[in-house]
Amino acid sequence: MGGIGKTTLAKAVYNRLHSSFEACSFLANVREVSSHANGVVTLQEQLLRDIFRDNKTRISNKDEGISQIRRRIGGKKVLIVIDDVDHKDRLDELAGSRDWFGGKSRIIITTRDEKVLSSRLHVIYKLAELDCAQSLQLFSWHAFGQPEPRPEYGELSEKVVAGGLPLCLKVFGSLFYDIESFDEWNSMLEKLKRVQDKEVHERLRISYDGLDEETKCIFLDIACFFIGKDRKNAVSMWKGSKLSNSCNSNLRA
Image 1 (cartoon, rainbow, N blue to C red):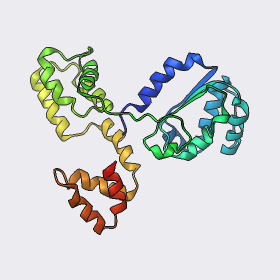
Image 2 (tube, helix red, strand yellow):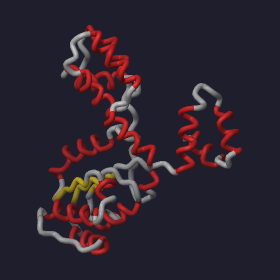
Image 3 (cartoon, helix red, strand yellow):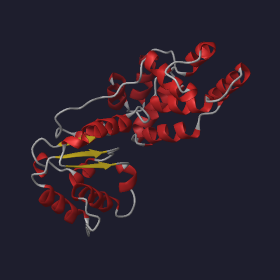
Image 4 (spheres, rainbow, N blue to C red):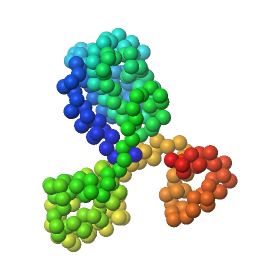
């Protein structure tokens, strides 16, 4: 899910471990950067420049970049983060296999789509939403500058933090920062029920846009038409629309 904290966790791990490696690179926003003209080449150049601390590295095309990464990094013990990968080709172009890097190297990949990772990796870690206590703490840091809400705002804060999505908690906490009256708090709560924050909407929209057309139809049916109903009603309709294989796998997920 977008906004659940994949990049934040990767940054925390990177910052904690980077001093234990010969060289490091953090390739942020791979999905966005690679969508631009020569974006993959830009990422390949950044990787080599970070590892060798050489701003003069130039690459003509993706194939040359793959060759340079394999040949030059070789036996180095490196830490590399490849953030927000949306297609397996990006991994082939930036970190094709383990023998591209020295022993005890670590390659950390963040993605919304587990299929991108295939079977090339040793460990897959799935992030979960924050629990109630963690959600309240994160919200409080952004709303009050402390790990718990002020006593008089405790009940109102609990109304905001349902869901446990870190992105929402940070954004909402910032919206409530410096609001001093109960009337203003209640007014902001009502506004959030009616109008979604733009930053939150755009981040979550990325996850929806990444679905194929069949899965989008299934998602919208689940979200809009079958709230509180038995899933067999939805499955019956999807079978009639020849969506049975997709819907059954999505419901199991």
